[in-house]
Image 1 (spheres, helix red, strand yellow):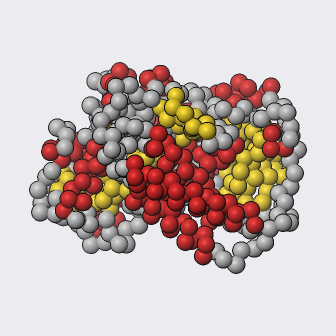
Image 2 (cartoon, one colour):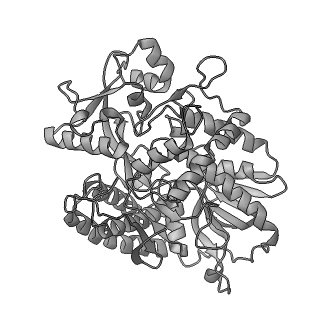
Image 3 (cartoon, helix red, strand yellow):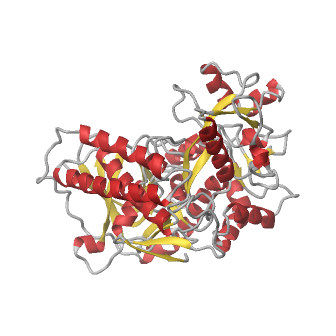
Length: 535
């Protein structure tokens, strides 16, 4: 039997953004943090490199801002960048105070590394498993907080807004969730709701992200009436481990930051042909260079070599990578690492402001789900976890200031599944899932053409119709809900890419290889009306 749960604040997502928001809210509020799998199943745990912040006396806010603006290829919102970087030191100190075990360089100083696109060493990290350390610490603290209810194995179906219930207001009052343990769809209502569901890189065939990165928050906000922006900017991490048994395993940017060299199959370096910064160029440049060389040579992969560094240094700084590669027969103290680019980060998302507020009253979006203007056309390495921290803390302050004036959520009807049946053709879901991710990789990948994008547009239209028909007639399942969200995200990615008649940052078009004199955000208005405008 379905049920209705009611809280003061509903947080959908249990990564760095969601947990930081929950921990930053006052303890008198009743807060639910919901994960569609285990509480630590999001992308945060997979982050290796670290968090970018102004932590060294030789560094400055202006320098970090300048690096972010350069990487963003003219599309960053400078106010958002300054807001984020200006709050970086305080956000990191908050993590330190919580007990995150960052790596130290000596007894008192934290070790700072450097990554591509950064002009200084400013990446604080916990060896090469920073996300793991942050996730574990935040989750432990959340489990200790009596006002936080942690619900796992609940996958969101859709947001509930006033207009969907026939009310006069359009505010968000919660969502419907498939309880994977019972098979029932429960309602969860709240005075304020926050989307912290991560990105949508699972829309591509090859990705560094865990299976849950299916763009759920972006798709739900879009269907509810929010604007989405800059969805054409999908960051492909240049170096994911290439091995049939590796799964989605990232080789952190810090390997190149500490002197790793990219090599062709014949052992020759090549990055200096593409950028004077060579291996330390921003990710979009490095990913395109690797993609170009692989296609030119017909190679399955290229190589990243750090074996010229002392073995003790490698094992100390990259223990996770060392152990994983060794399990696969690759000793990175002696051998180069086979690598390929893979979809890694969604730079666009739900349009939100510096408090995480969206177009819908009482609905917030934070972390990779949101488009704040910080990343522009290309995210600077290690700014992602920083964004999660800064915007979650800002959203918490805004919710705390507003919640006393927000009325209790309206009553909502139970989920009606009386008109649908169990599916006996789940092969349709698996086939559509595979087709979608393959044509997105082939037609909407690292290098694009108008012809490929138009082809993808036609394919996604047919898939959306088929999936919607399936959704309307059958009981919801985890795979069906993720597929429904992915096809909506794919649709907005393709629409956004077709609207951009230039090459900028992560969007590279052979038909429009030059950047326009002035940078514009690609903003899609809900109800599938699209236009170009500024955030």
